[in-house]
Amino acid sequence: MLDYRRQRGSLMIVAIVLILVLGFLGVAITFLSVTNTHNAVDELAASEALFLAESGLERGIKQWSLAPSTYAGEGPINFGNGSFTVTTPVILSATQARISSSATITTISGSVNRTIEAIANLGGPPISEPMTDLDNWEDPVLTNNQGKYWIAGGVFRVRTDNKNGDTYSGYRETDPTSLIFTLSAGQSINLDLEYKKKCNNAVNMDMAVEMVDTTGISYIVWSETTIFNNNSWLTAPTTTWTVPAGVTVNRLRLSFNLEKDGNGCKPEVSFRNIEITSASGAGTSVVSWQEIIP
Image (cartoon, rainbow, N blue to C red):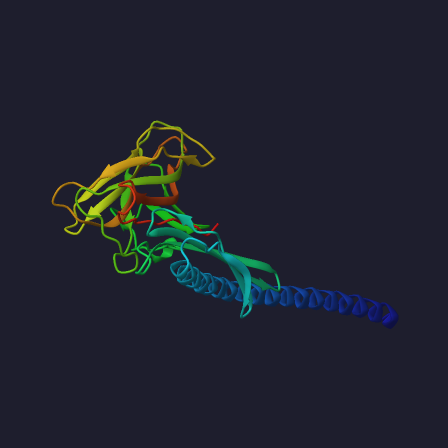
C-alpha cells in the first residue's frame, strides 16, 4: 500500500524549497531594482552638480569683475538640490584671474561633487575652456582594431588586445567646436600632465601630446618612448613650447603607438590631468584645459 503520509511529507519539502527559491529571486530582483534606481539617481545628480558648478563659476566671474581687488570667493551657497562654493580667485595679472567653483548634490547613496574652473578677463568672458569629461573629445582615430581604449574616472587609457607583434596606434584630440582656443605664432605655453605605462617587455610603448594647427599639421610638445612598467601615476616635467612662426594652433592631441608582445604582456598607456597654460607672462592670453573630475 502507498504511504500517503510519506508523500505528503515529500510535497511539503518541495513546497518549502520552491518558496525559498522564489524568495531569493524576489530579493535579487528587488536588489537589482534598487541598484538601478541608485545609479540613475547618481547619473542625474552628476549632471545637476556640473550645471550647478557652472552656475557658481558664472557668479564668481561676475562678482570678481565687480570687485577684482576684494572679492574672496563665497559659499557654500544653497541652490536647487545642492550647493556651490567659489574659491578665492588666483590672480594672474592686473586683468586676469583663475576662478574655480565646486558643487555638491546629495543623493540617496551619498554626495556627488563636481569642480570647474576658468581664466576670467576683466571686461570680457573667460578665455579658457574648462573641459569636464574626455567623452567630449573627438572619437579616436585608429590604424586598426587590434586594441581597445576606454575612459574612466577622467583617464584616457589605451591597450593592445592580442600578442602577435602587430601595432596599435592612433590618437584622440579635442573637438575645436567644444574646446575653443587659439594659440598664435610666438606664444609660449607650458604643458603639464600625468601618465602611466604598463608592460616591461622590450616593445614599443610610445605616447605623446601634440598641438595641431588649423591646417592639420601636428607638433609634438611632449613624448615618452622609454620601456618601463609602473602602477602609479607619474608627473611629467613641465614642458615649455613656443608656437612656430606663421602657425595658429587650435587643437590638443593625445597620440600613441603600441606594439603587441609575444611574451604575455599587453602594453598599455594612460593620460590624465593635462593642462596647458600661458608661459608668456602677464597680459597675454591663457589657454587652459584640465581633467578636473576625480
